[in-house]
Amino acid sequence: MKKEKGLHSRNIHLQEYNFDALIKDYPSLASFVKKNKYDALGIDFFNPNAVLTLNQALLAHHYKVIDWSVPKGHLCPPVPGRADYIHYIADLLAEAHDGKPPVGTKIKGLDIGSGTSCIYPILGNCIYGWKFVGSDISSDAINHANKILNSNPTLKKNIKTRFQKSAKHTFKDLIKSDEKFDFTMCNPPFYSSLEEAKNASSRKVKNLNVNKVKKGHTPVNKNNPSNFGGIKAELWCPGGEISFIKEMIKESIIVKDQCRWFTTLVSKASHLTELDKFLQGFKPTEIRTLEMHHGQKTSQILVWRF
Picture 1 (cartoon, rainbow, N blue to C red):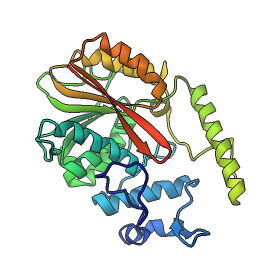
Picture 2: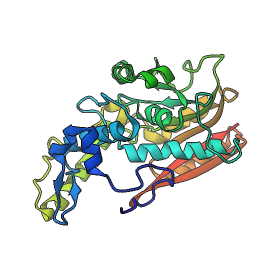
Picture 3: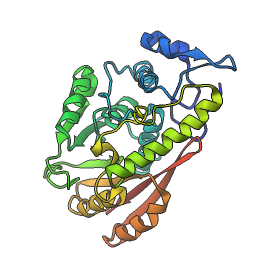
Picture 4: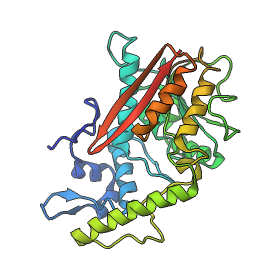
């Protein structure tokens, strides 16, 4: 089977999708799977319902997670890419465990902004058996995540959700005084305003429509680009990801003795220089940038510790 370009070497999604096996464990996927012009099975990735169902099937088949969903209008996280972040954190932790990624509930992670899908804690527990706290500023997100966890006893036992009362804070008033975490992780909102998020979505729709017309597909409605979900907290915050990560860095000093590693995704490589300079002002003992490659896309993970 063809290997997916760039995914982590331990990522179970390195190979192309086995649709027969996925459909066997998640029959709802069958209606979205068709043969393409090369006589190979696939789905229409322009169809948000197909994408959601594929990710549900991946979680059911590979991780035995049932009743996983995201509410309409929210971001649907692609499972293979999200799993990569977990594997890179495992590499980080392996340095203190004789080079072997640690497994089991002795390892505890904190996910800032776990959202409705709770995807990072779910994958971290399923792949490595780690315990998690998943936080969010949205009570609706917390409630939906709890519904997923309640349907999966092992996940419910090892993943706890926590409501962050203040949208201005990340770690402050969230981590309890007697808690310790092996790592924190975060996928921060990209954009600085609703207008910027809408413009980015419009550009994606325009590019999609160019490709769809070339391939004979129906264009996406530019006035209702449902392929690109996401509510405010998922897509934007004042100042965008730079401001969000800077606030995270400032608050990390408060809990520096309670967290071994701090990590966050950085969507734009051009932001790294400014963030690195800002981070150095807090005198961490170590700063790193890890790269993840997904096809033609490269993502960065900013890592630091005190």
